[in-house]
Image (cartoon, rainbow over all chains, first blue to last red; front, side, top):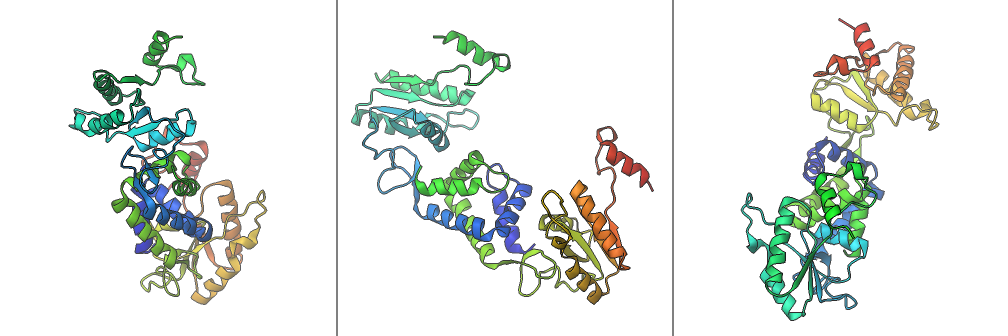
Length: 195
Length: 195
């Protein structure tokens, strides 16, 4: 195995979820299928590398001119903003097509262990957008982890104290979930939020 | 998410061991870390794409002029040839540094289900090399699966009937393996091959 291949394996093994073993498998697959795998992947990667950027308004990652395709979409409401932790979460919500408003991607979650205070949430910038667009609702769509819920609580307080309605996603039984496999916290939330 | 990113995710999700979810995670990671992840990876991939080829002698994948670095290495013995199923297996043996001879990568394993007969093993080409280099031993290093062992048996017969010594890897307890977790077949092999 030459140094070029060695380097490629090393670089691929540093991608999230991969390690040296899976990287080797991927590299062998790519080399074996140069025309159908390596070459198109290379083209696709260089296009993304040259064109992609982070939207200055919402924080989404996209290929665009001034603002991303969601921010510039005139058919979407701009009086509702959904706050997400990461671009991955934004994409997950977009896949469901259940939300037709704007987004705001946080710079991270509050974490006293990692020393991340409220300044990383960029809420002042968001408040500015809220006032400019007369936003009526902020939907806080954060993970149900300790950090996620702490951050959600902080954000909801921040907006309700400024007379902007802030809601968060419902907790309950996942679709397809079986009752006796649910943890106590979820079951408790599902009971107390029953409709 | 724009069409360029969508295409890249699709292409990455087709790599072995990955799916849409891990591909999305990788793409977001690469875009987030353009300078330290996407750009070097892109460079490394294009170098491999341009330079790598399959060695006409042994079947190894490498960056070389006429024959690969193993075949052209004068310090290696060329009277012993190790037969492996794939380039991944060759690399695995090379990592242990326990073998300093030549290799022969098979085109595949015998499989009556997939209709793969002895012609895919390219044994005539190998026999030609054996005669040219006065090879004294063929080491058959194939997996201990049904197809691997069938193929190994066929290859050993092929060479012993032509007066070339053919050996295969030992079976037994893996290093660090616990006796009571071993399957019966391995334990049986370990007993009958005891030293």
